[in-house]
Length: 124
Image 1: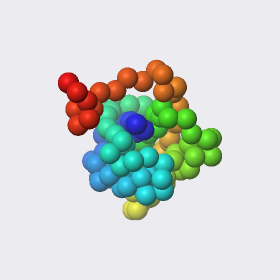
Image 2 (image 1 turned 45 degrees about the vertical axis):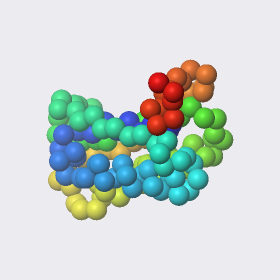
Image 3 (image 1 turned 135 degrees about the vertical axis):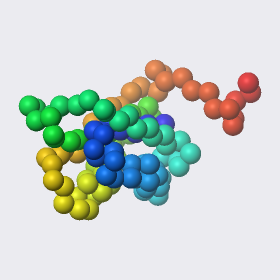
C-alpha cells in the first residue's frame, strides 16, 4: 500500500506513456519517504467510452490514491501533488488539440479493513 488507480481516456492513454509515469511516481513517492518502493502499486484502466460534460472530444485522467496506513493530511496532500504534477507535466509537455482535465482523489482507509498476503513473505 498505497495504490494508485488511474483512469484515462483512450486518446490521452495513446499520447502519454502512463506506465513510465507510474514508475516515476513510485520512485518519487518512495524517495520522499511516503512509502517503501515495493509497497507501491499502480494500475491503469483505459476508458474506451467516456464523456466530460457534454463534450465527447474532451479527455481526462483521474488518479485515485488509496492508502491504509494512517498519514497526516499534509502528507496525503503532498502525495497527491506528486501524482498530479507527474500526470499534469506529461499532458502539458506538448500542446493538445483537445480540452482535458487532470484530477487526483485521495481515498484513505483504515488498516483494519485491508487484508494482504504477499508471496515473498507469507508462509503459504
